[in-house]
Length: 357
Image (cartoon, rainbow, N blue to C red; front, side, top):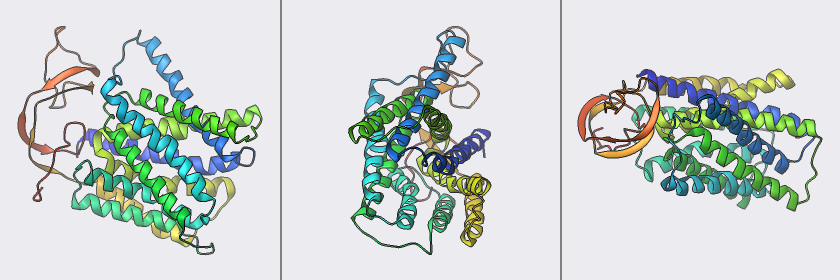
């Protein structure tokens, strides 16, 4: 496996770690803040935190960006991701939780990874190898085991269907985001974070939710900047190298971080199901790390823009100034080429596969 692919796997796992840690930390904040304002400040924290980083980069690099900028053709994908994952999904989930038992809701939320994979394969024709399917299956089963509460009330209702609908919306969000993952992840998450955050903040005001003290708001903003902002940026970087299905599968390991942190903060002893789920997740992750995918494939002529370097085998064009040694971004053209090497459904390998491949 290429070093870049290993880097993408590490990025996806760190993204899962940061996001998984948000649940027990948010549980502490929920004692002093209502759910909708908390969601608002978490999203706003992601947008504000990354906006600060982006401004620092612009000043430090004297206005030069090494990442591709969001252009007019990207707006529909970005708008769709915000509406599906930042607005529609959370609202659907909040209303559905009113009539759905907690254990059922936790179990059904694990459907997001499955929904992402199905949409990626059926709608966007992303290639999934047999090994990757095994990894997806093992990690999904592990997620289900981690969600089971044998002492809670179970049921299936319109609320349950609503949670499944929310997961499908997040799956759409993940795949839409994949289609613009070549563009600056900081800008994407800034727009998503501020857009969803201000929407939730407006909803909280309309519903007359009470707001907590400033130190609680500050805590939510900091948590959001890490568990939502940094996490989603790393998720987008992983999307570039692995595609939506594999990235969402690795991201499904997030409950492990939450369980370990809950043990440290609240002395909550994991159930025996955790001891079964943990090795399943580790084996599933290992399947993806060890995945080998190589066949003769054709790159059609394409003109696009994204951050790149000139030693990856796909960017051998020249520059008027004699070439650039650092990562940079500009519109460039790839001529048609046919070759064979190990690859994943990254920015340059989202071709359709035959049954033999």
